[in-house]
Length: 144
Image (cartoon, rainbow, N blue to C red; front, side):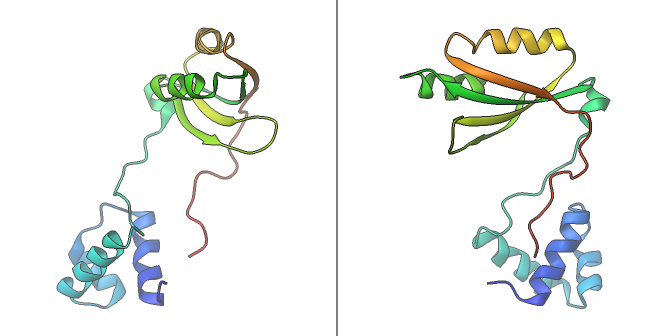
């Protein structure tokens, strides 16, 4: 699906999505138009979904992270999913197999805030929470 040049382009962009087209082209030894065409094809094929920014939650006052396993009560799956989608402190959520239906990450300013958020869910689902002490592996690309 990807050739070595595509992989090289993706690795550079993963490190710095704001790199100029000119600098990217130089690093991969292509002309700017050829590099632009490669990027366009990667976007069209859905390999590149977006160019984004990496914000440090601590800099915004979110000093705590929690991982919450959520098991909706019978008949409450869609209600719980909608709640998770609506609560902005849920920064990511996976729908999974097994005993739980959702595993979610929250960014929080305090333990009190965690209680307030979980109080909105606990009458509709069972939850199990773990506070994140450290994140030895940050979100990263799968091997290219």
